[in-house]
Image 1 (cartoon, one colour):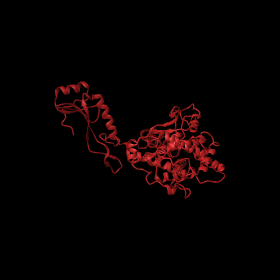
Image 2 (cartoon, helix red, strand yellow):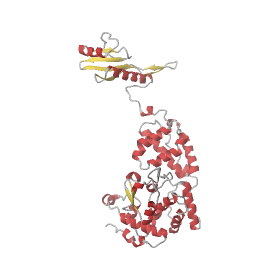
Image 3 (spheres, one colour):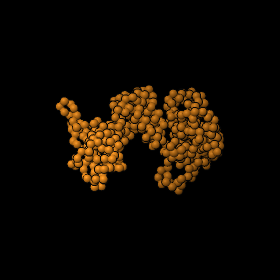
Image 4 (cartoon, helix red, strand yellow):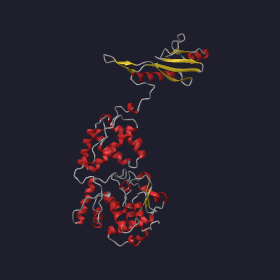
Length: 432
């Protein structure tokens, strides 16, 4: 509460405030223009303070009206750093908050700021403020969220969504796009709400306890641990089938098979990553799963595949369906099914299910069986070598990896090539 006030000054002015300071008589002087605004004169100068009461802090009356709480004081700053005009503006803003039921001395929480915001708003905030800065696959996540979630719940307040609604949506995704797509969609919506909880934007998380693998399987074999390794005959049939597919899907499948690369390393590859002189693809850290830059060696054949990709007029991406404007975020089910269908025709018989990611397991298994050093294979796959070796051994095996890929290429093409003649270079002696 203010000290006993000196004789009334009426409406404060800048001249009156300076005069009060010159007199130096301690007291609280009410500004007649703004309710509760006082100019306090003390031994060390003048300060501004506001007396206010918060609506609703006193409870609710029997008729349902919100009762104001106890009187509170708020410091608004020192004079002359805070002028009379500024003090009035700040006081008016604080009184508006108090009238709305918020204590102006307490900064409004992120939850209050986000109250009523839509899921589209939350997704955009998540992508901009977190995913783009912290996640290698942020573009994939943004695409997944805007494909599977915001078209259906985007205009809803994100705080209004229920777990049951998210579960029903996941079941629809599993039925129409496959259980793998549903699990990806599940992972990304959980990440969005998890981030919102950490940032105190959301008060509760409807994505906790969402339906999992068992509830999303469409058949017993779905979402089981992948162990598929193609035979050499099957790999050769895949290679031939890629030439019968539409561009860029055929070229993309072919280069994934021959380089054993990750989908994102090529589907998101930009023309600037293509090192013609060194005959490599230079994948930056943010374009790679473990956030470390990676050099992918190219053979003559894979170099030619990349080199022949037409330059898009709308953007830098090598493999694109939008004239280079956007990369390919996933190997679409339509084209993956087509690849399996054409492979079966080339093989002359049905074959077990496979995905483009199985090419990595297939190639690494066959190369190890051919005697290629396991560390060369691990580095070829972009895996970190663990333990003491990983800490102290910094050799990247670039030419050894290139030789290993030539060897793999010769097996897939069924030819005796430079790869077989240089295979010994990939068989690096095991460190003692």
